Every structure is written in C-alpha cells, then in structure tokens.
Image (cartoon, rainbow, N blue to C red; front, side, top):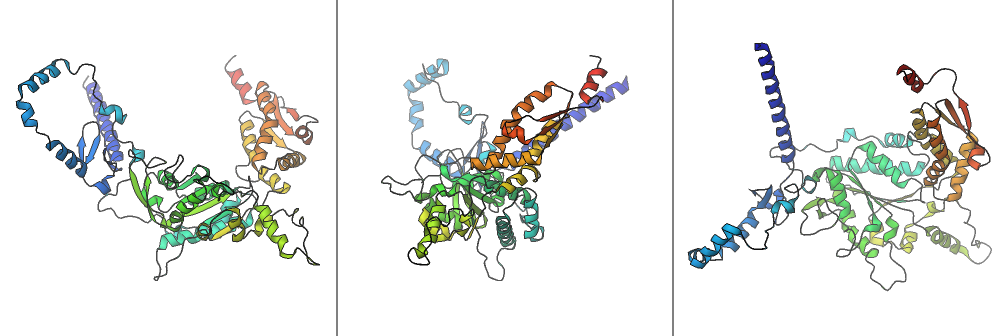
Length: 499
C-alpha cells in the first residue's frame, strides 16, 4: 500500500515539475520580445521602461506622465465634496448609467496584449552579439553554382553572376570595413522572359545560404498616402521572415519581382503613383539608409509599432520580364546603319532567340526606368528563353522535377510510372507553343495525368503505366501493365484482415 502512495506521489511531483517547466518556457518565449506601448506604439528599446497594466497592457513612461498631467488639470476634490455629485455616484453604484456600456479593453486587445508578430526581438543585457555570418562559412562561388545546378536547368551565365555577387556581398557583410576601404553593395537586376526561372533561382539560393528572404511584388507598391503597400513594406516582410530580429534582417535578401511594372507610364495625364514615384522612393532603400518600417503590417498607421532597420547590408535582387524590351533593343541595333551598303534590315534580329542578352542601360532607360534607380543596380544580367531541349531537361533532371513528383505520387499506390523519350519531347513541343516558359509544363502534365490519377486507385492489379507520345498528342492511350500473380501489399492487408 505504501508503494502505491509513493508512486502516486512521484507522479504528482513529476506532473507539477513538467507544468512548471512549461510555464517557465512560455515566460521565456514572451521575454524574448520587447513590450510595445499601447498608446504611442513604440517598442521598449525606444520608449524606455514600461508600466504594466491589467490585461497585458503596457504604457511607456512618457505616455503615463502625459496622462497623469491631463488628469491633474481637473479639480476632482471640488466635485467629490459636492452633494449632488455624491447622489449621482450612489445611483451609478446601484444601477449604473442607463443604456450606456463602457468599452472593455480586453475586447480591443483580443487575447490580451500586443501579438508577438508586432513585437521586436529583445536584446539581452551583457549578451555578446554573435556575427550572423562567418567568412569561413560562406561557400565559394563554384560551390554555390554547383548547388544551384542540382535544382535549376541551364541559365549558366545567370547562375555564375548570382553566385559571385552573393559571395562578394556576404564577404562584405562578414568583414565590414577592411583597411579603411569600404566595399560597395552589389544589388542585382535580373531580366528574363516569363517562366525562365527568376523567382525559382532566388528561392533556391536563399534556401542554400539559410538567410532571411523576403519576396515582394512591385505591382502592389504605391507612393505614400495612396491605397496599396508602402515602399517600406518590402523591408517589413524581411523583418517578419527574420522573426522580428532586426540584426538578422539587416543581413538578409529582398527579391522584388515584377520590377518592370514600376516603369514610367507613357502618355499619361494622371498622377503616376505606382510608377516613377515608387522608383524615387526606393532609391534610399537600395543605397542603404535607416528607415522606419511597420512591424507586422504593410503600411504605417497609429496602431502599428515601427522599427528602425538599416538597409546598408541588405542585398536587393530585382527581377522582371520587361515585355516589349526586345523591340527597343532591335530598334537600337538596326538604327546603327539604316541607309547604304551596310544597312541592316528591320527584321534582321527577329529570329534572334536571346535578344535580351544585348540589353544596355540606355535600353532600360527608354523602357521607363530612371537613371538614379539603374545606377543603384550595378549587376545587370539576363536569363535565356527556354528551348525544347531545356524543357525536356526541366521535366526529368532537377532534384524536384515534375515527373519525379508524379512518380512519387503513384509509387504510394504501388504503381510504377514511366515516360517515353518521345513523350517528353511531345510535352516540350506543346509547352513551347504556349510561350509561357516552364509554367506551361505543369499545366500540360496536369491535363493528361488527370484521368490516370483518377482511374488507377480503382484497380489494384495495375502495376505499371507508360506514358507514350500518342497519348500526349491525343491519338492513343498509355500502356498499362498488369502486375504479376504476386499480391500487392494492399491485397495482403485485405487477406490478412480476413475481409
């Protein structure tokens, strides 16, 4: 009997210890973030000490003093000595104000307090700040490119340029100033047709380097004061990706997609709030400056705390398809000699596949990008348009190729999926007709794999499916092979369960 009570006592002690550890952990997690003033929305690092009020509300010293000064202006002593006021107070204590309900502060706060996504990571006193990057840990350019080769097909020049630029940038971040020589930032402008892999290249790069990455869209950016996202919202997204740690965010990567959409609008009489004005507003971000960004929101307002982020060490990569840029390049190339024996025909470059590789800064200026903006993007490079052979490689070679994904899906149903080489070429030809790059491959495969993915789970006897050229072209069907007499694991489970 004594042993039973001892065991029960040990279990109670163990439960209490575990509960205490969980409470301590939750308190530690909360202590990692700075408190934010409920009135002025400033974090603890800027506003100073905070007064803790009920319902997890914090008020800074300044706001508390202002409140007390405002309250002290009224003569409450005279009111309290007034007999009529005492009668009113008795009535309030008994029945309250008729048809009046006071605001409950917990309703405004939701679950109580400001959420962690709008708080900044706290810097602990006496803590030695470890460098985010060690120069010895930065992979060399050839290693970065080798890792990119596993996921991205082709685009050799683009992969080489981005590997060198990123390597130099993080050497600059890790070393700071060397011998009083300050290394300038190498922001990049990536130009390529739709579906050529601009966004995919940056996503893969950030995953390999394990640094905070924010992917923003330039189409939603507008001048301050207009409906849309403020320009600082791109840094806000990076801060969120870094778990609201300012020091970590200041060494991250921001990829701004669809940068060609903020080009100067031509022949317009209305105010250009999402074009040239956005380019002007981004100049300070690209060059490096201390900017106040909203925490956990896309625009500044009275209810959102602000954080100061220095963009000096943030690498900006801008990407865009730049439609109609080819026509500007062709016009410049054919205009060099338009009359005489050396004259070029207007259609001389119509069959040129990679006409974008001949782009110059002057072409981009004519497209609508302002010189100050282009001057802050020193590394300009282009991506090639995808050929039929590249399409076939994209289908089967990368680590997460589309065909490998479908083979894995059918493998879970114990069915082997194979593609003929002729079938892959037929898929690539169809994708080339759509002229939307690698995105077309997925839509084509989804279309002809629909019936197969629907029918195969019906029959456990199917062992292998071979996709043929005739099936892709709609003149035949896939080759289906029935599995041998050996039972599948599904059938074994049914037999063993006695059904």
